[in-house]
Amino acid sequence: MPGGKYCTKRYSAELKRDAVALVGSSGKMVTEVARELGVSPESLWNWYRQARADRGEGRPGELTSAEREELGRLRKIVAEQAKTIEVLRKAAVFFAKESDR
Image 1 (spheres, rainbow, N blue to C red):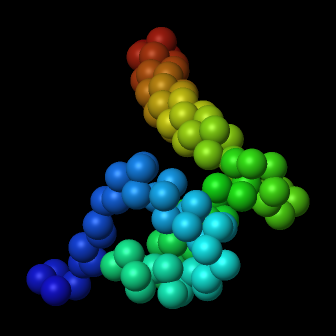
Image 2: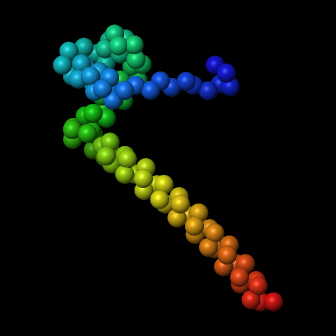
Image 3: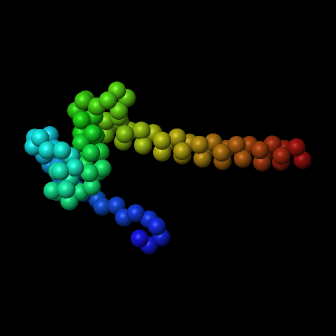
């Protein structure tokens, strides 16, 4: 692949939901369903595991989709605040030097 980067496919929420339902109802293994649908087994397994977590059936400490979204939002806020703090710190240093003159 050019530049050594991977090409990721985007699947619709409907396809993911239907694929997860098929795994749960068919009794087939994830790899078999993935092969039939033309998706990677890893992707389907991740969707299945996330759906279980969203239903409260995940492993202890596993985040739901809503929790993952909130975590991402909070991390973005923290990053913005860290930038603001850095600007304010630099401004304080600048003004401290100016007042010493």
